[in-house]
Image (tube, rainbow, N blue to C red; front, side, top):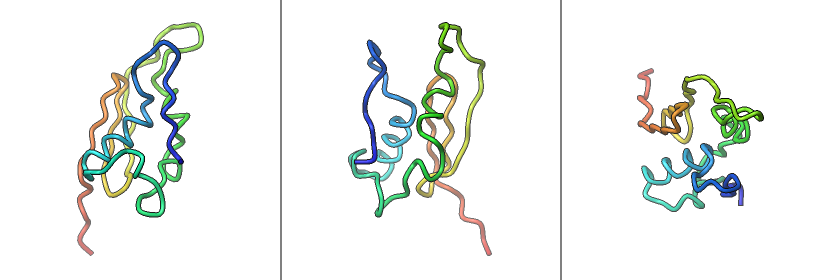
Length: 97
């Protein structure tokens, strides 16, 4: 399986990379474990999942990181992940050739 669902010690929240997978799965009407090649793109082909998980996580000394968001396209959707942990998935608008 390409998807790790390990959570941070003592924290019930899922990593942001899993939240992205779960949001795509919900839009597609499938289980998150079904979001893997060859039927779907691999998240790591678009963004480094470990980097995504640590992007907004507190620093090693516990101080919070700044506010912000990251946007990318994945599996035909525009994905926006915010520093608050929100994941917004909208269908990519197809450009007309």
